[in-house]
Image (cartoon, rainbow, N blue to C red; front, side, top):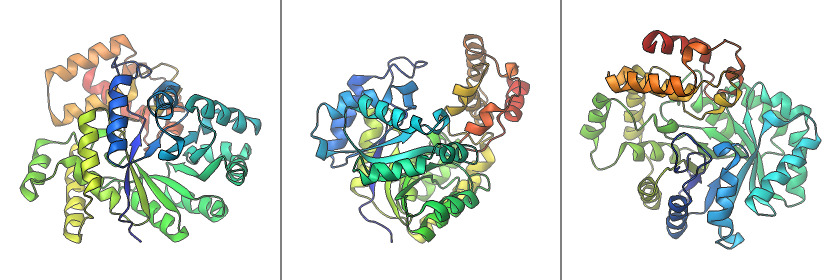
Length: 372
């Protein structure tokens, strides 16, 4: 059933930074203000990961939240990094690091991170599903689950096998990906409904893609209903779906925080007409987005050439919507500071980590053709 109590989750993946190109430089003053406002509005679900902000997100949560609020007043969801699992003992080693960074003794939610056709094998070889079951039995994790980034048939296989263990599936769910054959948000959602698992939503705004849209599409939103923002539309879509308990938003400043809190304090479920309107808008946005990237940055960590892949895809998408000389200049600066798209050696390591199932080397070729 649709849950009127769906709440806004605070995603700690895109926190405010004091240095734009240094993910570890978290702006603690701004982040602390955001935490305080969020808690004051009656929300309490914080989502982090071993990997976020180059492994500094958990420390930031400890400082801004754990050391300032009573433990029973908030929930923390954290994720075991599958790509670091080499043997069974790694589960406990990594979880102990996570607990220490956060300064807590138990997780409210513990997920196995970034499960796809590659990392499911790592998780199974390390007996990670059995490990999280044990932690739940020991009350070190109140709920357990997976963060899923693949197609519906794999999700069905996993839930068929582990539904007795898993309470939650964290799912990429937004109106742009709902019917997308690569991401399969709708089909994955239907699998979760079939197995009766709770859903927490990630990427409801797709890393900003559903806010940074072409003016022609913005105009259509305004003509249909000028009383709500484009971000509100995306959040309402995610929160209106069956079995969704939390919609995560990676808010980067206090203004975004205030707007998103307001959306969920006065949450209005989409009606059928609004749902159909968003499906039409998805088709319109799809025509303008060259690369369907969520800008999560997982690919960068695996690139032996240190190519800033999401930055280049973002510039390429911007350039296809707004043809600006500034995009060309920014590409040149970024390529000089880091590495150009043409330095890709097509090793394919990035593909396994891509949450959108993109053929990154092939897309980088398009970036090269346009900017270089």
